[in-house]
Length: 483
View 1 (cartoon, rainbow, N blue to C red):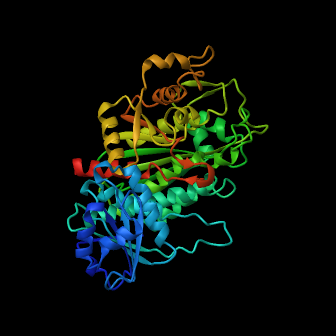
View 2 (spheres, rainbow, N blue to C red; view 1 turned 90 degrees about the vertical axis):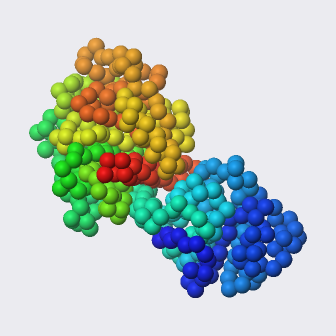
View 3 (cartoon, rainbow, N blue to C red; view 1 turned 120 degrees about the vertical axis):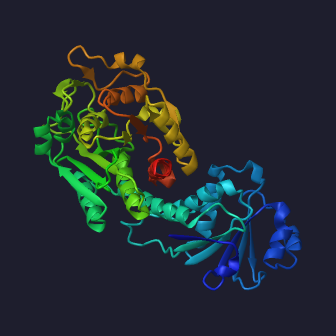
């Protein structure tokens, strides 16, 4: 969806038959004057329109030159929050997406600090997934023209928002596809297709299981060997010609997670197709980078496998040697994400990273701790943690810093191996991060546990595409800071 920013409706009047105006109750007279609406205070009084939050008033034939106009109340702007604005964006898009190819939205009443996030929220509200439905959504909305007498939004910012939208939509599409479609080889094909689309920007390397075995990645293979679908490690390098050390993003890509021999309960197991949303967010971020053209060296690496029970599957109690040389006692085969990630985190050292961020639907414990609002962020690096927190606030894709302390490491002690893959019932998300930390001592590192934020359940079931906005804002901030 295309976004523009202008100072008046007249600049889009010929192509935009529908106008939505954000308004406070005290601003009705200003709206009446700007758009020459006769008797607007009287209409508001007769309809008892008070411009309370998300309240709407449709004006048909009362605004000169505009077929359809609608006022959307903001309530008290001093009380506005980004989370509330998402509801306004959803209301506008829902009212328009089946009727108009273009709409205009006057955001002059919106405080300037919300202009950027509101534009992003509009793009997120315009997503739908109907790939496997016989009857498709009849959505026609293609462009939103924002209007503001004064706005900090620039054309460059809008371009970045549109790039984020494209990447986030890809991440959502991949997450929503079922496990019989989206499996490890499929993710590799998606990466290769993206590189074919942007050959000047991307370089892709795919490791098969034999190559992994040759590298000693027996922890990864302990997961993938239970499935008839072979695992893959997929690396996508963006702007490889740049000399600076890259930011490396590592995505967990368990394309379906049964739990393996430690089998999950049947209820809700269909949602385990979302266990590859970390990988989806990496692919989405790489696409967004290509769309935006940011000048930064980035490597996205995906650990793609299926976790299935079979005669070849790993048993609880099995011991494997990781690529790092550390041995792991696998006490629970449903703690498989850390097993594929630990070898991948060792593998990415070959890129000499400036820093590494792994993204994983890693633990149910993180869902218990933070729900679906905030992503759990773990890092021993205060500066990196602060940068991720700032990017999360700017993009409304927020994180909450969780502890990753040596005090928790003893919970991972094993009497038979260097480390156990689970640390008992206490602080499950923390001990999972501590497990990963043992493989990241050689570089700056942060871990994002997106188990609660990668998808929604219930009637609104579907992938969210998080944390693509966070990652893109983090990378954009880094470009701005370091040049």
